[in-house]
Length: 102
Image (cartoon, rainbow, N blue to C red; front, top):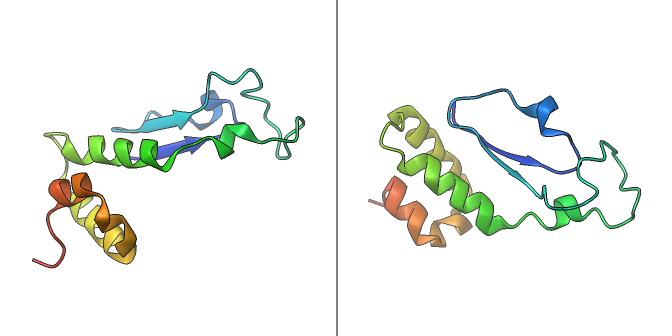
């Protein structure tokens, strides 16, 4: 099952399940990543605060555009996005999944 995995302070070795189609988004360039703490010891929690919605949408779009994308995955993604109508304003997702009103 394709997955977009958002990782903050965790070491990705503990959350990497080698899922087919997994895309990991993590701010690896931060000096403090991975700290493995629930509460940010530096008080800024940048590893999560700096994860951008655009990166998540881009990762989802890449998964959906794969030629080998399973029709069931596309159907589930369309259902989920139907529950989050605000995301239908992203043209690339409408192109990838088709217009939900059609």
